[in-house]
Every structure is written in C-alpha cells, then in structure tokens.
Image 1 (cartoon, helix red, strand yellow):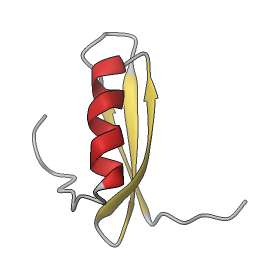
Image 2: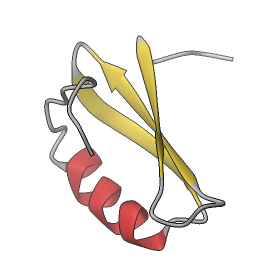
Image 3: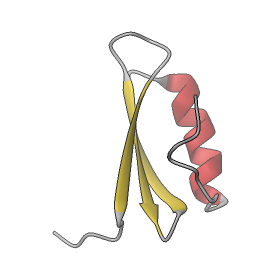
Length: 60
C-alpha cells in the first residue's frame, strides 16, 4: 500500500464510541478517518480540502 502521509494523529470524538484519525504530510492535513463522529467528519472535510496546516499538540 502506498503511504502518502508522514504522521497520523488520533483524537477522541465527541461521542464516547467515536474517534478521528488525521493524516498529515509535511504538517498539512491530507486525509481523515472519522468513526462515529459526524460533526468531526464535516469539519475534517473542510480542513482536508483546504490542506490546513495542523498542530498535533493543540488541545481539542
């Protein structure tokens, strides 16, 4: 499998059974997996489209 990312950041979702994996390349968000987390999916869709620079250490 071809890996385009160089870092994965996993965060809990608002729902107890959900989580989000953000995939970064050179500090920019290039993809996200959102499990049981519709609000995070909607936000991640925008962030990935804009290739937002992410701070993995930021508090959520």
